[in-house]
Amino acid sequence: METNSKRELFEKMPVPKALATMAIPTIISQLINLIYNVVDTFFIGRTGNSYMMAGVTVSFTLFMLTIAFGNLFGIGGGSLMARLIGQHRDEDAQHVSAFAVYGCVLLSLAYGLFVYVFQTPLLTLLGASLYTMEYAKQYVLLVVVFGSLPTILSAVLAHLLRNVGYSRQASKGLSGGGLLNIILDPLFMFVLLPHGMEVFGAALATLLSNVIACIYLIIVFLRLSGKAPVSLRLSELHKVSGSQIRGLFSVGIPSAILTGLFDVANIFLNAQMAVHGDLQLAAIGIVMKIERLPNAINIGICQGMLPIVAYNFSSGNHTRMNAVIRCARKYGLLICFISVALFEIFGGGVTHIFLDTSGDSAADALATLAFATTFLRIRCLASPVQFLNFSSSYCMQGIGDGRDTMLHAVVREIVFYIPFMFILDRIFGEYGLASALPVGEACGAAFALFLLTRYIRKHAAVQ
Image (cartoon, rainbow, N blue to C red; front, side):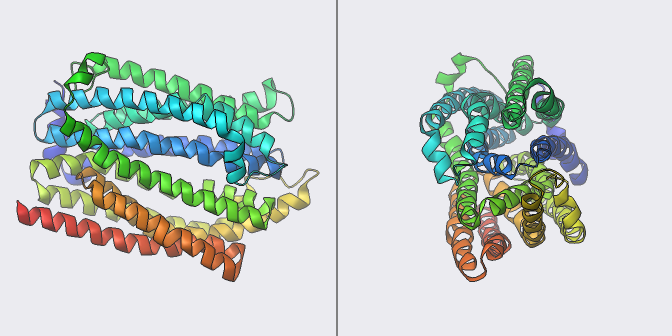
């Protein structure tokens, strides 16, 4: 198998080069996918309609939950596959890949059906109002109801490919879908569909792009089958052992819950911000897109780091594993501090890109942007500690520490972030609500570093 040619990357290649080989393609795909999400916001903002913006904001949470389901089988299966390869158990990794793929197919179909049946109460819970419900439903129908299968399956296939050393191929599929979406967005929104259907057009572009990306990744998977420890054969399913299934879910479930709880926190954020008004809700929606820029880069670093950490932890090379963690942490924090400085200096200019202030709703648009600028300058302060949360969590997932991954997820969101939302909102209003992110993330990061250090030291002592 071609896996043997990947062992040098995991075992011997200089740490910065190995991390760059795995992380740079992932960062590129993260940025391109971020760009197409931002492009949605940008083009919708060209309408000058704050209610369209708010409708997409509340529906985006349901779309983000697909990432949680992708992590369930993608990170759970991918982390296990990297550890199995580290133990030279390539055939077992191949069985796990098939189980992860078909498991995600069933789950995504179930989620799409669930959202279709309960979309009205779900969107009401997320903060949709009488003025934003129609736009939210347009986005959800295409991107979530019909789009959950290609979205989740693409994510899972990319995770699995990345964790067996094929980061470039995985990123090509996701990046290609993102680039296609950027091209299709203005075509559907402003050329092919009538005025008033801009949200529907953005959603249709996202759906078609995800379908094409999914088809590409399936083709890559099929071509690598037999050369690398990946497979789409149904016959592989009965070969998966109970311990391997438990190993997948022991990491996959905490990873999904981690992402899911982040989305739950955003539900609380949107719901509380909606109490202050639709303009504040639209503003926080703009900020949540902008602040994803450093997060996208850092998640790319973490996803590139995870397979190398998992492989070397499983093979017992803790010296190399710790060197990879330190290298990733250094570059991630550098990016965070640069982004904080840029957002503080240029926050006003950045937010004004996303909403047209020259139309009939100029007053609402200007008020929305005033809120967005202040929110951005407050929330960007969370970037460094947010990266420490990401990197520590990905390390715990890589080494198979599902218990502490779960504990960290619950404490980070339920014990720290969400309570701080209520406390600071009550004291300082919408600006206090924005401040809950840096405060909650700082507490969560300290707890995550404690958990990771404790687990590694304990395991090293046992070995």
